Image (cartoon, rainbow over all chains, first blue to last red; front, top):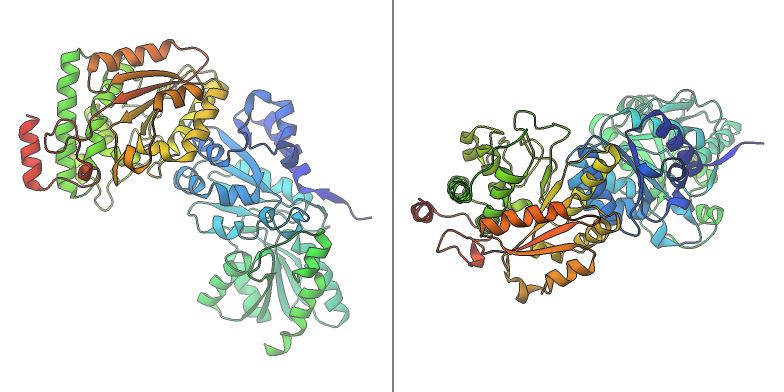
Length: 311
Length: 273
């Protein structure tokens, strides 16, 4: 039985670990601490936890004030609010100042489920990616979430870490995590699939199904969106000539766009986008929504099969 | 560092010198915001020369009091004071708004003495709140001062911060509201009414001190009073005159964001001689 974990549970536990290791860590939340799991830190270190109520803009700029005094600040809310509601505060007070503020946004993507479109962040990577100084990690599973949190704690500057709401299966044998360096999960010469977050497990299933059809697909987990691992992307473009970019995000501005920018400038090959095609989300169960928005392993497989001859 | 305190007369002279520098910088830059820089000049001169604990030779001194200018467009005032107190040479003032200058059109941390960027209104009180909470976590006794504009309080995020400063009982915060009654498009009362200001801040849980923001004695007394307030933040609501000190700028909305011409600068400097 494959282990299934909530990324936010792992995050909450990682914060507690960090809190004991480093007295300089302060954690903020905006009335969602039981959902984001910052409540675990709050319970252990109440003197270093501040709940800002339903006021994300205030929380973001206050995080900057704390960081200006030497604190390393982790803060959490849902991705729609972290990236959308408080974007100007992130821009001017955090990113422009290059402060040690680590924004850990939970409930990102379509798999938020029944809460519907207002709560499904499908544009947050795009919003964060345009800000100078901002580092972005989209961990693929539970264990990688802890690695991402530790990387944010150990590297200076602002971070945006994108977590989902639902449980995700743990991906075995990923190899070590290195911030800024993508992971090659399966080798292959016929096509490259590049995915992040919850799409990595879908891509892994697609790779297995494709193998049964004689297609050797390379799979890359692009967990760090910024700084991006250009080298592994260019190598994939040169060696496989076809890239399938998979993300639980609008096809504009996220992982696919990051890849396109590098490919277009250096080694143009076809990049097919498996993502949300310029639509808002809607209510439904995670699995239903992945199907409705063409984000399943089957959709990845189809994207490969219908494009591989066009190389 | 214990800063030598100035007499009322010396403070008045110092503020006049600061106003001269503001006019010179803006005339040289050819753009910028004289109105609010001049209206806040007495308040912030008194703060830096008689109240604030700081050391220009060690800008990152952990025990320093913090000052944050939330209404960042009034940075010519801040830059003039930072130069006068020794953070950087006065010649730098004439590089305001020039390519590559440490003195950007709105504050940023490349200027010695600036703690955090500003320029997008409505964020500064939140930044000050963060500084206040950091003092609490670190068990330090420094105070945090934050200059707000009156037009700025039309930003909703100011009130998020106001609510939170009171909720967290941040008695080490002293906000200063430059109530000159003017904003870019006209008088505040015509554009978007902000009154009753004192009642609003009181209702949000603040200790409110109302003063004439051009009376040095009242200004010093207000800072002293704020220090004595326990368990809640204080705000000094200072009635001021936009463009104060230059007759043809006083109360003139048009000088919110327009630099004086060379001729206007000459006349202004004559008046401030």
